Length: 311
View (spheres, rainbow, N blue to C red):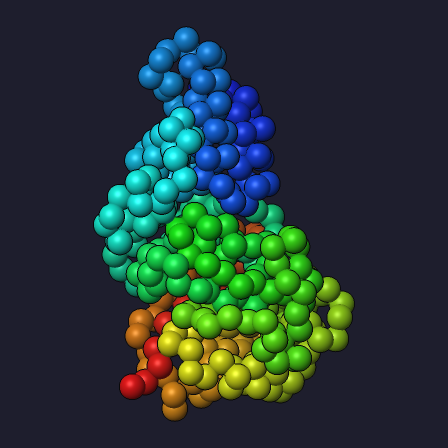
C-alpha cells in the first residue's frame, strides 16, 4: 500500500464504517457515503480525479469502478429504480464481484477485515450467488455468523432469511437448528450451509451444548442429518465444510464432506465442487516444526459443494 493509500485509508475510515454499519440497506445512502468519501479525496489531494479513491473502494468492498459510479449516480439523481440504475441485463445484477473465479479453486489473500471466527469472505459469496442464483431469489443461511449473506444479498438484489444460534446482528434471527425449520421460513431457492467445522471450532462461538462445535462427533452428524432431511426439496443446497484436524495427542483427521455426500446423494447430484484453501498463516512456526519432525501433514482445504435436486 502506497503512502497516499495509507493516508486515505485512515481519512476515509468513517465512511467505510457508515456503509458497513448500515448493511448497505439503501442504494442512495451508500452512494452518498461514497460521494462524500470521493470529495474528501479530492480535498486531500487537490486533484479532481480523486486518485486512489476507486482502488480503496475495490480493496474495502470488492466493488468495480462501474459499481461505485452507479451508486454515486443513483444518490445524485435520487434514483431508486433498480432497472434504471443497473440496466436491464439480468446477468449484471446490483453488484458483481470485481474478481471472477473461472476455475473451481477459489483463493484470495485479501479478506474483509472481519475478525469474526469462521467468516466466509464476501468475494466468495458474490461469486457463488452470481453463478447459482438469480436476482430476487431467496437465500437461506441458518449459520449466518457475522452476516455476510445479509450484506451480499442486499448488494446483489437477492433476498435472504438468515438465522444463527447466537445472532451477531439485528437482521439475523435467533434459531437453533435442533428445533427444525423456522415457522416463518419463506419459499427458498438456495440454502447456504456453513456450519462449525466440529471440534476445530470448539468453544469459539459459545460453550452451549447445542452448539455443533461442542458436540461429540456422532451427535454432530445426527443433528446435521436431521436438519438436512427437512431441507430436501429445495432446488440447491450449498455445503461448506473443512476436515477437522484434532490436537497432536491423537492426530485424528475427520473428513466431513463424505458424510455430507451420504446425507444428500439419494436426492441430490453434485453440480460443482470447489476447493477453498486456507492461508498457510493458519499455523504458526512451532506447529509446522512439530509436523515436520513427526512426518505429519496440516490441513489447508475447505470443500464447497453445490448440490442440485435430482429431476
